Image (cartoon, rainbow, N blue to C red; front, side, top):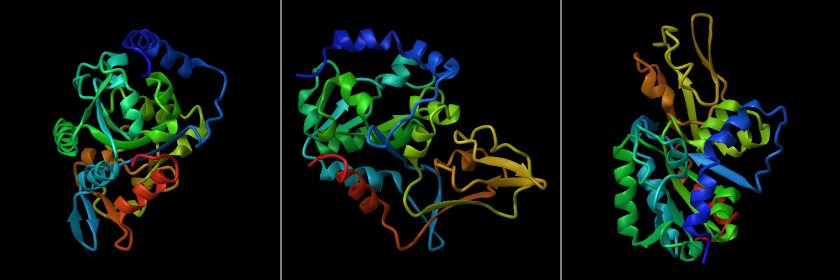
Length: 261
């Protein structure tokens, strides 16, 4: 059995203070990819060979179908800890792998693949952003085996601890451990008029204005698609390399890190 609900609730009291400390601390953390790896799945329009493709559910379904055990967490720890007012805290992440069986029933419950898919679709309809993440802190907090679990989180831009830490960039290691989807590229088209609406929303601070138009640092861009949502002229485009199957790539990456089947 994993951590108790009492322990979890106790730790949640330190959520906001820990974010404040992360902001004001003079120390820079040295995060390792052994402890955290994540891939953000874009929810916006993605082009492959000139045609639109829908990525979120195909990638999520591939992971769900590969998992031996599937669970739904009772709540999102980020929204719970921050007291989110825009999205419900009880719309928790998926946890994949046999570590699910170790959960305190008050923290999460086992579900079927169909139930997990319905949960993911509900989260996407709410406008949440999907992210595949393998994080040692989550395993510690819930008291489950790190090498037998994987999360599919549904994040809001206002409360997500990962997005917050990427924006803050106090740990270069952590920043680099949050990845763009394999084969995905983001570019600015000639339709850009330099309005700057995409600059502030970029969690990676990868967009700046140069010569009267937006420019993307492709090395820093996480491919979340937020800039596409914000651009009034639809001048930002996400494209997928036609030779890359992101579903297979993501499954292979995380099978090398953890056992979910």
